[in-house]
Image 1: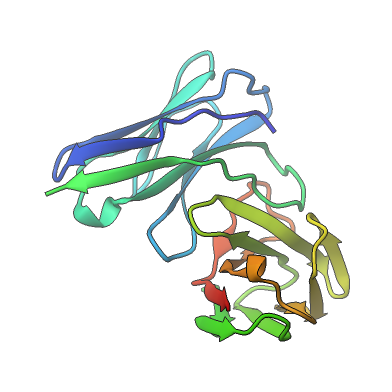
Image 2: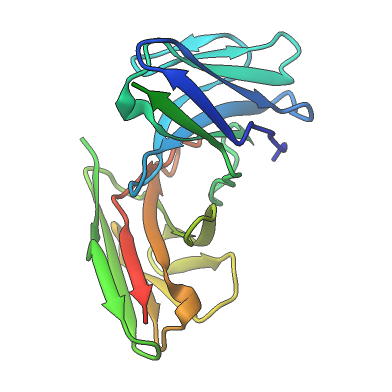
Length: 112
Length: 114
């Protein structure tokens, strides 16, 4: 699986858009970008995934650059409950039964 | 809809004691099942995964073991706990035939070994 690089931590004001970057310069053509988050003392939660087109669901939007070497997760109107560690993971579709490789992620802190 | 349960939620055990953590999934069949551990201040580490009853793959050699006695039941065990076994244990499931690797995690068990 391709390696990802994320900032260690970020702050965002409540009500503003939170933009979380992820670099994955060695991504392969068949690899998807997945985002999960882990709120303190809870299990990780799937947010969104994409291949090359921008994706949006009820939780967030995912913007993938044209060369697919980086992506940005956007939480459009951040709330205090969005404070969590956000993980960017790259894996091929149907990547197998083995588990996900979580890096250190970005600790997003939403400020009131 | 699918749900995943883990118990107990918290556990305090002395060094050298046995361990049994249970995970069950409802609302799906033939899931892939996973055990992860998160030590304090550390990332998630995959411990075991299973693609079917009785089939266990180990990612990290240690004093822990896993079993899958039923399709939707996954158990993590130890005969003798070490201090280093303390951590947050998470069970997860993934559709067996899914194209996308979306895993769904349980609420976790926080284990403290004293």
